[in-house]
Length: 149
Image 1 (cartoon, rainbow, N blue to C red):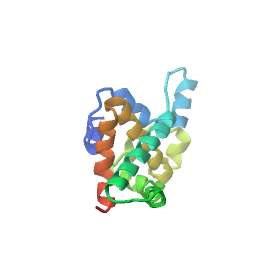
Image 2: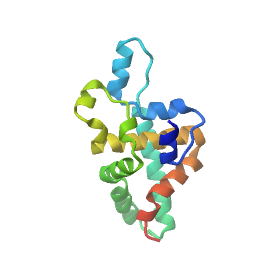
Image 3: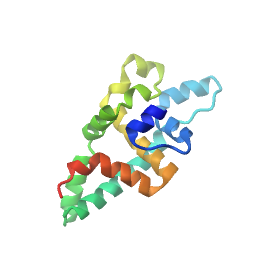
Image 4: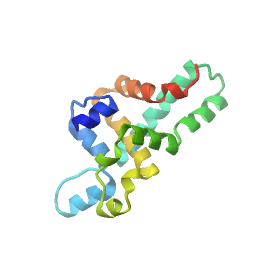
C-alpha cells in the first residue's frame, strides 16, 4: 500500500481502511463465501461522496460562486464520474482495486464507474482515518486547479 499511499498523497494510520476502500462488493462476497471476513467499499463510497460534496461546495463559495444555483451547477460538473475516474487513472488506483473474478475478466478496474466509486471510497477512508481536514486537503489538491479563483 505504501506506493499507492504516496500516489494518493496520504499515509494511513489504519491501513485496513484503505484496503476496504479498494475492495469491491463482488470480491468481498467471494471472500465471505470462503468463510473469510471481508468488508466492501460501499459504505465508504457514500461517506466519501458526502465529504467530496461538502469540500467542493466550500471551495466554490470561497472562489466566488455566490448563488445556490451556481454552486450546485458547478459542483455537479466537478463531481462527475468522468472527473473522478480521470483522477483515479492519474493516481493509478486501478491495479490496486480488489475485484471479483467476473470483474477481473471484464477489466472493471479501468471502468470509469469503478474508478469513480473507488475514489469516493478512498476519500471516505481518509476522512475516517485522519478526519475532515485530511480529507479536505486531498480534495483541495485534487480539484483545486479545476476551480477558478
